[in-house]
Amino acid sequence: MGERDAVDRVDEPATVTTLADDLRGLGVEPGETLLVHASLSALGWVAGDAQAVVDALREAVTDSGTLVMPAYTGQYTDPEAWSNPPVPDDWVETIRAERPPFRPESTPTRGMGAVAECFRGYPDTVRSRHPTVSFAAWGADTEAVVADHAYDEGLGESSPLAAVYDRGGRVLMLGTGHDTNTSIHLAEYRADFPKERVTNEAPVLEDGEALRVEYEDIETDTSDFAELGAEFEAERSEAVTRGTVGAAEARLVDQPALVDFAVDWFETHRA
Image 1 (spheres, rainbow, N blue to C red):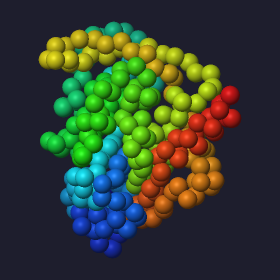
Image 2 (image 1 turned 135 degrees about the vertical axis):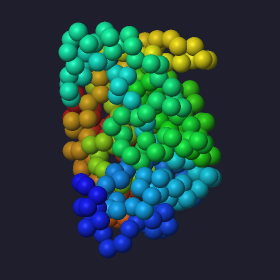
Image 3 (image 1 turned 180 degrees about the vertical axis):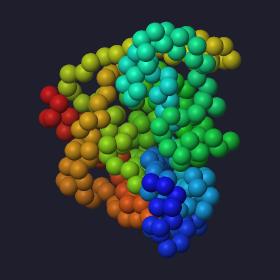
Image 4 (image 1 turned 90 degrees about the vertical axis):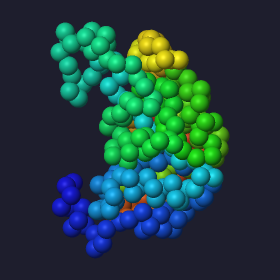
């Protein structure tokens, strides 16, 4: 969607004030832990672009709450497995050997969208250390959410996703769907069904020293997330609040309820 389309979709621009009002109207509360997935283009034309969206989210949650966003870096996954697009076989070792170390403070996100990338760059945002599935956070519980993010099983029990769950957090989807709802990954780790394990390695900086870390994980799969999310919303409608923020369809989801539902769903559908 281009900028002309964004202008044509709305009668007036979204602003920090109108977006914050819409978020409060949806039910976002000061002091809560909120994990956000946002499509800037879905919001219509925004005065100030992604920065206005981040400012509105911070205003709605306030510094007594905690704002969290994925800050993934697919450029540090295994290049041998890349498919969109693949790279020539004789590039793989060069990529592995020559990638600069992942730096939480400066390495850009990849494929996360303008809002998440803007949020990552705020000077008081803190990012976890995982080289491929890091999270960025701001607010009262920032350190507790992003500290000690384990390399192994990076979306599992020692991840920011689990920290959001433990705090009874909610997921805010602004113009996005369950197909990209990263909280469902936590249920993949918790559910009892056959899982394939994979090993990856990536360059990182630890205490100012460049080194390579090797870590193990499960093979995650998002292909059924949309189906799972639709069934969750149909069966647990009380755990989902729908509304509009800017021009975007918005959903506010009880994250623990979603994860618990997804555990049972996976054990039935992936067994």
